[in-house]
Image 1 (tube, helix red, strand yellow):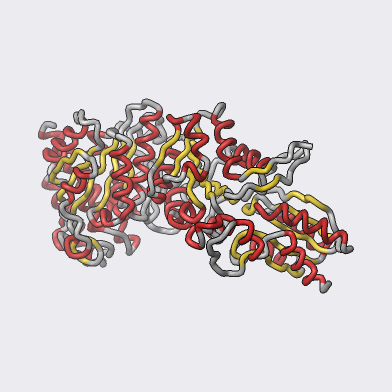
Image 2: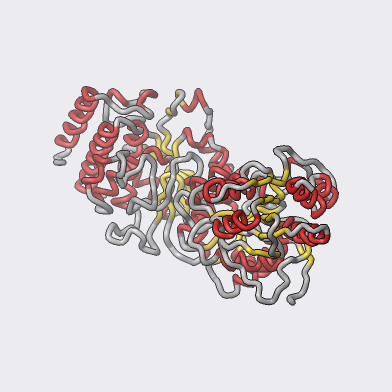
Length: 314
Length: 283
């Protein structure tokens, strides 16, 4: 087993950039005055000549990234998910994704676990916004190891990618030595026949813990980790629908437009079964410590376990 | 520039206007006003300044041109075609289904287009990125971008200007096509961007001015940019006439984004053909 790591995926992101930049000279990193928070500061320290702070001007940062990419660079442009995908949506859509330029957008502090900063900074719409853009790949790693693999994998894509980064330190789930990040492939973390929990990002580990608890109660839950939300692994979803008959999606995101809708689309078209979407129910968050908020919003193992029992009528 | 060269540029710009008007008429849509105001600037850049090769549009060390005011592409397309980036036969298909020439520039479909643009305010940021890449790699190419005066109402333009000056992108030149009009009226009425020269200077640019329809004036300003040793990015404020060359369109706000009907088209074409003839040019 690989070592269990408790780390925020933003930190893993910064480390991965540094490591990959050793051999890939085209990597450049842009930030919008949040380098210390997005952890691009790790890269900045190691490669100051390839790091550009664009100041608090996200729209321009994305445009600059587009221009760099048009000249052969591989820019990673980072900000909070809220501002990267919200403020700069149209720059991403028109200057990056439409011409399919090789820009990687990193949205840190995604989700409710941003915590004390409150609703204005807790982005719960980024996956929906990015999924809706043609040419865009959307990845939401669940832990340290997955983030390391994801950053390496996106270098092999000649086109735009959105990477979701979390603020909160979380315990790794992919501790098996043979773990390998495969773009576009879901990962079955636990087999089961009664129901499937399909989770993404920070709540994946919660889904695994929930499944262990449910097993003790006689409920055999499959757990699938979807790190690549677009393009989504249709096969693993259809297989789960066929074999377990019921699906619960689980994400730290609005239930509108995120993983839940992506899974439901696949299921509705290919193998209609009940899909219960578990996430943030079309509302804003508020200030508070991340862990408390995750509990209040049901984004924990007990939270998803409750939903599973309700779905199974137990 | 000798008088023969100047005559040649005038002929090319006139042809670009004729093709732009034809494309817009065929498409029954497009933006004649700004296409006509920018035609001389495109012509000068592509024939006298930019180090580009129509046979190798992706040439690594080429100068870049980003049309930030993307809607004014019909006359840019004409100049690119005249220069040999693609066939003149593409021009009448402007904006048609399946056409190479999109309503706004598409770098993926059109040889010679360095950046997709059309959403105002975004092109200049991409131009900054290209200039920054040149600096990083110690390349000596330059990046030119053309903006509209109305476009300067976009906040992103000023983000980009600040960025360019802060990063000392002296390989960047932003030309502002000041034709004085935008969709809803005069720029003075709608947005009030003046004093543009003082604003650009305050944002860290070395500012030049030119008459955007006088090749001597264009040459003087561009030479100023090319020989600048200030270490600052440069801007050129180009005084132009919206609709230049087609008398009934000149300085008329309603010709921003409207296509001429058959009668109007014939009148405009006739006028431009007469100009071409008087210059000694043939289509």
